[in-house]
Length: 179
Ligand SMILES: Cc1cc2nc3c(=O)[nH]c(=O)nc-3n(C[C@H](O)[C@H](O)[C@H](O)COP(=O)(O)O)c2cc1C
Image (cartoon, rainbow, N blue to C red):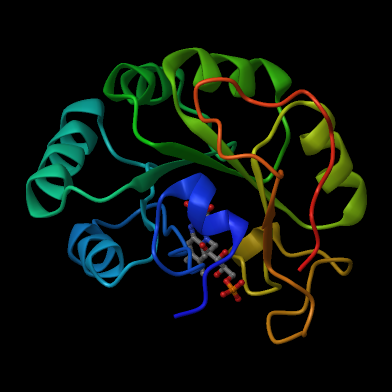
């Protein structure tokens, strides 16, 4: 099976990341992706904190494998983000904007940061801010779509990570490996 540094960093078997869909419960999908060796993900948009915590617990019961909890700015829910930090998932992914302060808080909680970006400038900002993984988000990403966004079916790499596996000590060098 194809293994890349992304697998080492995220502790997954295949370099496949589940796309998060905010408003719906996607626990079964995330569990299936995790069990198949990829990184499952759960969106948080429009969910109450108790609902979201119940989803996270259910996913944790379904699989011991790593997964990401996703947040975004439309709307950004501070209570849900705080709850995510308390839960401390292996990774937190973020959609639509780069906020260095949120990345710092995620690292302090022990979670890796997966930044979804729509162009090179945003990717560079994310790396400068300490993001561990960059996802080039496809043009079908709802209303986040812009003319500069990555074509979904392009041959461009869609995810890359920093050259490290040290989760406890996120690297400071803003370098992104292309593969
Ligand atoms: C209805 C809808 C809701 C979405 N909600 C979220 C979300 O809450 N968080 C997020 O990061 N991405 C969200 N996305 C974007 C998807 O996760 C994914 O990045 C996008 O569909 C592009 O996928 P592709 O790169 O495989 O084409 C949403 C997309 C759609 C169509």
